[in-house]
Length: 125
Length: 357
Image (cartoon, rainbow over all chains, first blue to last red; front, side, top):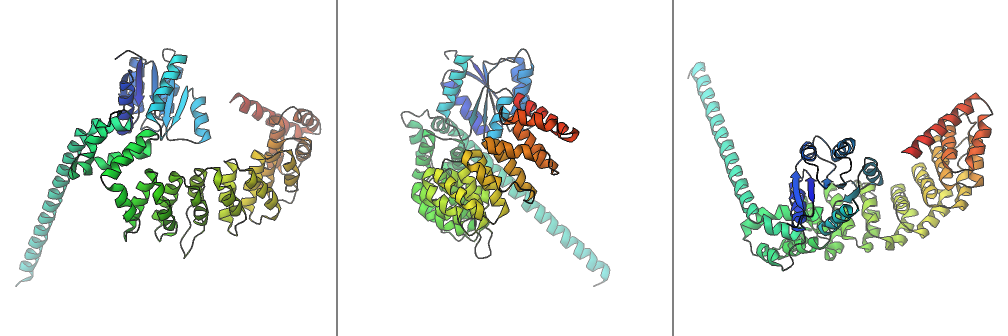
């Protein structure tokens, strides 16, 4: 681990969650994974990460709900958030950015590109 | 045999049958659970190499070699995850996962299953070949757009979109039209598939715009709206006046509003008269607002005092959001009476809200 930063990955799809966790860990990030929105917010609230990757469609709290909570809390308001989602319509992307997303990645996605996005967002943060 | 004895024997027989059925159910459930656990355990063993491949981290090919060497039983446990990953990823890992499926014979089996008697097999095969972006199968998939099964037709359209072969554009458009008493493939599925084929399909879209079937024309207009096909936009300009289907005509005007230029205002003005259908007029108002220019703003200003409150409100909003030219026209209209003044105030309020959003 070369200590690039901590990442919170939230996705109810186990395959995606494991894949993103694996890829980011290989890239040197310290990753915490959450299977739903409530667990994601609990993890962010307990220990704000350097960046969060949120799926939008999750049971209970959606990724957008978690994002709004992140932005509303002064302790987490500046945490960059990338939405990783299958919702690809222009209106979905607009809604994501309006809710405060830093970046938006549409599934199907390239794991390599996702790491570049994370690195790029963190370098600007 | 007395009636009582007969009843007792019947009850005993029914009870025995119930016990046997319950036993069979429990045994089947236990067997399924055991099998699922075995499969999950087998899959878990190979999770690491599968993640390496999916994450594009298999630089020396060892993970691929490991998974190519698994037994048939192990492959059965892995296959659903591999196929699932195909739909979630793009880039280099997809090619490696397809190589893995190909190694285990799944791609070849799917190609054969396209002609299976079972519609479930045909649908599954079409789905897998689409996920695998198997260009070789495009020609074999085309006939399935006219399959007797609704599901097969739908899956095939999506798969052809994923494969992205532009030569499939014409049969995809044809699939919108139902034949032999079957419903066609839903328009939005075909439109989505066509949008993935690139701009080389413009000649097919131009032909679709003059199809006798309004559903096909509608799909062709939708594809024109969301792609860059100037030739198709010209065909829409030529056909607008002759379009007999109101819904298609509305889509055409919407497209001209989004993609057209100042010259298109004159084409649209003709449909803003008082006797044009309400929905069509309102779409024209939005299109004129998008296109702008003196003729458009003049017509929108004239509509502010109309009895059609919906069209008048939209015209006011279009002028409020359409740039500086609309402002003096709205001021002038607001002085014409209390009703128009309220309309203008509401439109400006909505415009300020949308600007903030």
